[in-house]
Length: 281
Ligand code: C2E
Ligand code: MG
Ligand code: MG
Ligand code: MG
Image (cartoon, rainbow, N blue to C red; front, side, top):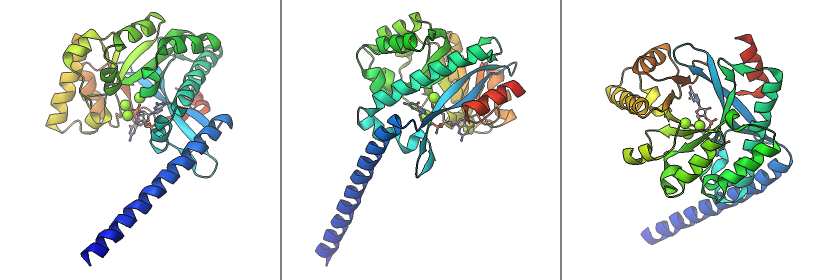
């Protein structure tokens, strides 16, 4: 009986595995079709200056208007795109769309508090891993008639550590073109402090798992405060992600965190909604 049960369990897992593999294959085909059918869209989430509350920029977050399943967040499909080279095409689409949007905003006179609105985009490991990534950025900027100053690139600690040999050169090339370089979800990875000082970076984004535990959790307080102090000491800008309450804003700002992003200010919105939101402020 035990043997029979073991066999049944095995068959169950085998079936489940086949189903998952099949679902991924379908998703992969749909992703490719989605690209040609223009089903992807960028949502924009405002980033503000923690002291003045003035708008400082926006983060572009990818959405997929799936013909059957409706609006999908990246967590539902990025992992499949990343397993295939599709992520390169999708990533380039994001860059192109962000550059075109930044240009349109300039033409419309839609600005941040201190000047042109910078759009931050999230990079995938695959994009950063590719030889000549800086050249790709350069080409996309030229084709979009956009300037490097209009864009910010968000990389994760893991991406930086995996490319530790090439990262300094690539980042330096990107910054020489005027782009801002940020480390996303900071505090969740394993970047050594020594590496942080060696890399040419502009900004650290404190992961929302820390922000979420503020203001009461002593551990989150200690870590967040230490990250802010270290970043400031290294001359980096600090942005806190996922800020939901005034108490969180107050605390982060008292520690020297310069920028905020989160529900308290605004959730990601379609471009037209974001434009109306900026004008209404
Ligand atoms: P991320 O870059 O860390 O983006 C922050 C995520 O937190 C976004 O989820 C955003 O909608 C959400 N968020 C922001 N503020 C709040 C808040 O106050 N409360 C809550 N509960 N959530 C908040 P989203 O848009 O689902 O994106 C998830 C992740 O997918 C992103 O995390 C990023 O790593 C990745 N991603 C998004 N767009 C792209 C893209 O164009 N390319 C690549 N490679 N990855 C992307
Ligand atoms: Mg991000
Ligand atoms: Mg993040
Ligand atoms: Mg994330």
